[in-house]
Image (tube, rainbow, N blue to C red; front, side, top):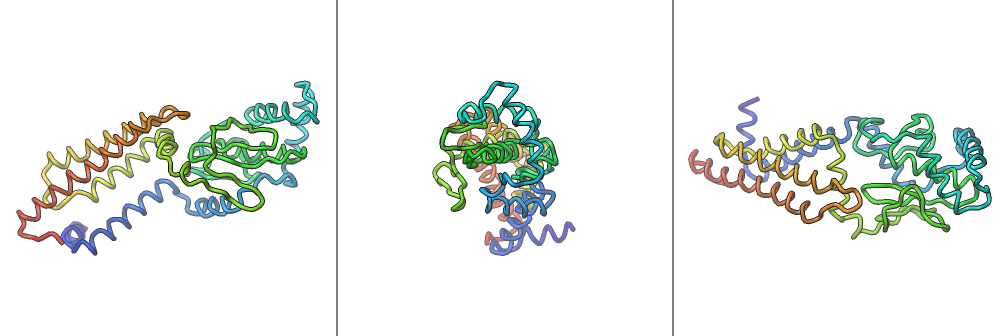
Length: 282
């Protein structure tokens, strides 16, 4: 194994880096999605996002009955649509305890079908929004899913519910999924996701990147500095995303700069090590 790694380290650039990027991508994928089957299903659900809150789902009948009782006990008129929006949020949050996807499904993100939400009985904002939209649709209120990388909520002609977070990066209706790329590419929401994601899984990704960046014959001091700067960048990004509503964009950029700096530190050492071993850089 050591000889294979050494050959890879001294292979031409066009051979070395595609292999390293492939290894890194595989590690990232299986850290985020230990179950590839769920990843495939997740993509299918995103493609048909508007069909997930199906009011005809048989499993919804019992939830719908209980929601009617909840509305009556709260003194909400079934035909008074705006109070129903507030009621559906409190009802769904009560009935479906909040748990992250890696706790429920073991993956970084998964948008479940309505039947899966009801069967599990616990979900994050994605599953809660699907259930809320279905309950509203069953009462003739057109609920559409909207969100960004942080959160998913419900948009209706009467207003929004399920804790909306401002302008949505994407919305789903019968015509398909509509994406606003400037909002979707905002680095703030992913920083929030990094903050919330289990640190242990992130460290696996970070250490993998560090190992793949290590040049041949690297000195302990420079390798340790590179690892420290990588860890520092991760910590900065996690701290920057602590405020879900307003992540610190400047701090996110500073953390990303640390990750880039670590790569430069280790790459610079590769130049020196290749000179010492008499090899040229490809």
